[in-house]
Length: 153
Image: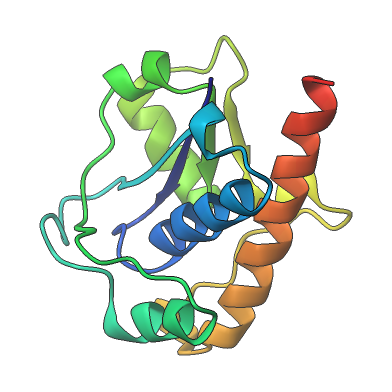
């Protein structure tokens, strides 16, 4: 069982998009039973709020639902519970480290670290460009899945 936690600031845009894109990717390969995939926030600002409407619409445009998802906060216990803790940008990394203390098992990475051009995922909260975020998330999730499958081959 591979356990992945996607993390961003509020858990209403980027990390839930990554959660549901990755769930779709593993389901398309018939691997859903082999994965636990979730997302969380580093802040408390949006706790209990649903996925931000423009992010929900972007997922829906691609046939992906996220009904019932509400923002949750990452905890220190998540470090032990997940194999991969995948942040959307460097500020998320810094905030995750404040929560977990340190990363002795090297579980923490940026989503786009698994691609040929590592960087932070575009933040649509500030840019309003949910299409750019969609591209980053789908590229990163596809690359992360390939990385996991190659490790377990």
